[in-house]
Image 1 (cartoon, rainbow, N blue to C red):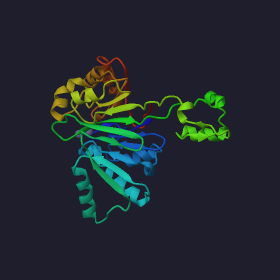
Image 2: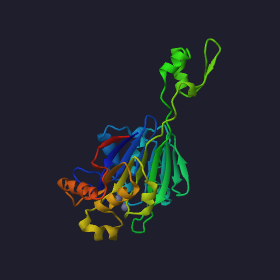
Image 3: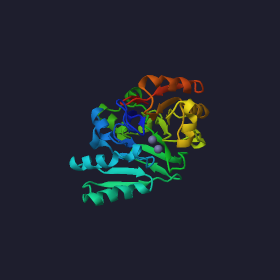
Image 4: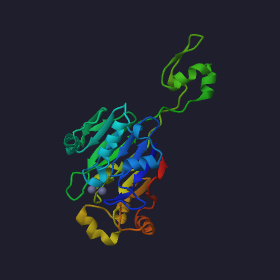
Length: 302
Ligand SMILES: [Zn+2]
Ligand SMILES: [Zn+2]
């Protein structure tokens, strides 16, 4: 699984940071997590194919998290996307897209499906399993999300295959999970030559929120917590008033959840690039694991 940050500012873009968007991809599935204004240009700059986006998740209907969606849909229509685009978001999102397209008098000409976010539901995509949970964003309907890559098949054991006299031509079939019949008539099952299934990595994305118990409980022990840190702690009052977190508070959440890695993102545009090292320092006063300051086009492999 690769996690690629496409926009790491909050509310207002800066010269070096776009608005929130994170691309999560495996070999044959992908999720665009939030889609702030300018996301399609960020994808093009990053060398990522717009046509390959399969799922878009919008965590809440603040402009910095979804104003890039309609332009993306328009571009995909022009490029004649031939696979379906699946959009998962809060209940009002489908109506907003429909209303704007109605006013414009142009409906997109490729297949989209819309699923409303529900917190008591497990969403099974092609290669991902999703769970949404409410967060605390000044009373505005906002969801965090837990993303788990589905189990991958175990490793192939060539010595075992040699021992069982499996011809090379049949080995790929076993690796794909099917039994094979050998020339001597013997049946070999995949589990005889494959190791145990490997668990996929797990990510939790907080979206915009105050530090909140729902993030702590969903992020327990996960491989990566992507937590917003809009402000440094001297602006805690501002963070409380606007439903955001400080770097120190993000560190407290990561520490309470005992995550393996903390990624800080969604920085207020008031901070200069050279200020961002202070976010890491502040969070590291509390969280002793690995902390990364996200920047646009940063890619992390899990
Ligand atoms: Zn935001
Ligand atoms: Zn917001």
